[in-house]
Amino acid sequence: MQQTQVQEELVKLQPKGLITIPKKMRDFLNFEEKSILRLRVEKGRLYLEPLKTLPYPVRTYTKEEIKEFLALDAKETKKLKKKGLLK
Image (cartoon, rainbow, N blue to C red; front, side):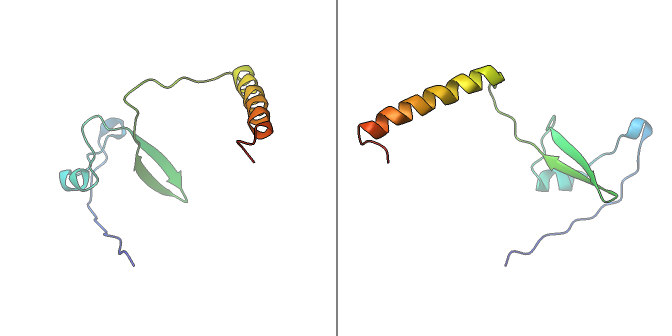
């Protein structure tokens, strides 16, 4: 069973709500300068979660494009099943 390592530090809330995450915690969590973090409040507690970003732009699709893709996929699946290439 893996044991969770607990680290604790006291920090002071600065003007405009700024806090500093202590260096040893940033190092332990591999937080780099300009890392993107998700903040979440749950049951009166604040959680910080590192997010991974992709090094390239990601495209979004419209509902119509998704509908067209699914229709094409269904058509191709039917063809492949007919040829015995899919079950």
